[in-house]
Length: 356
Image 1: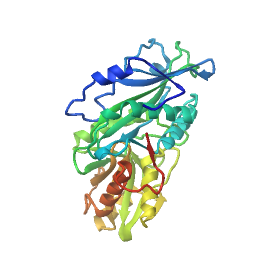
Image 2: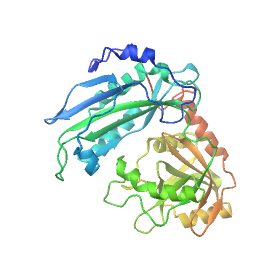
Image 3: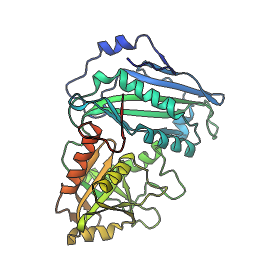
Image 4: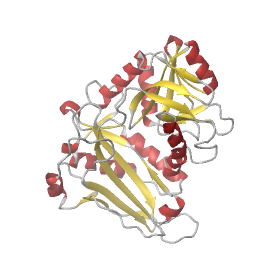
């Protein structure tokens, strides 16, 4: 077992892990590793990082996180497919984004090397719980909450940082998804918190997700808040469209779009494969026309949880457009290439895999 010099390890950890049995069906995010990382912030500094048994939290009813939503989180994966690994995929990208979210939400940053040590410890101690099937993984959730105890409306001065992990199967069970384009509600506006990975952004999408499900759709595609025309992202995924001559387009990043690690990886991988990638404004009205005319041949979404997921159709209140290729060749190629990189079956020219 690795030595983690900055980590206080509870002596029960080895026994708890030895007694833990994984169920046959994992689902996604429902089975939890029996261990967790915890670290508290007070008096302007972080305390000792600890690896402890998984436990419920005790919070005062007036804790800031419960009233003013001062919290952030991340999502990343560790892989052990076919006996390879375990690997973490681009963990420093997630840590950097976590700290950007912390700045936006008036929360303290976490030292990058210390956060990485916590992630490595979770994976190292939980490695026997990581599924070996392709597309399965240990889904890792670092998060931070505000813990000041009073109802005054001001930033908290105390915080709790934690990491939990879930042995998980694939997020989507179907091959492709149907997408509803939301033209009434908005997810994020300029000057707001759209680029921060904080719970309020996801809570804002829930009502539209329910309505889309009732209409028979799997996911929601969000538009810009000002004109409700340009595509931004889906509720937990970034969006891509493939056009004639194998040109791949994705909405350019703004402060209303989450800067996805998988998005960044897909762009770099596609360029490495020789594809032309354009980060640009995409009108949903033009996109629907381009799908119907055949100019747009494939669409897909990407994110840590879903990897790359093909889109079979997009619809708004007035128009439905069915993709000619609901699982097109470029989508399929990029998905397989990314999985091979993540799961250790291919060379890693980018240095994205971190062995644990």
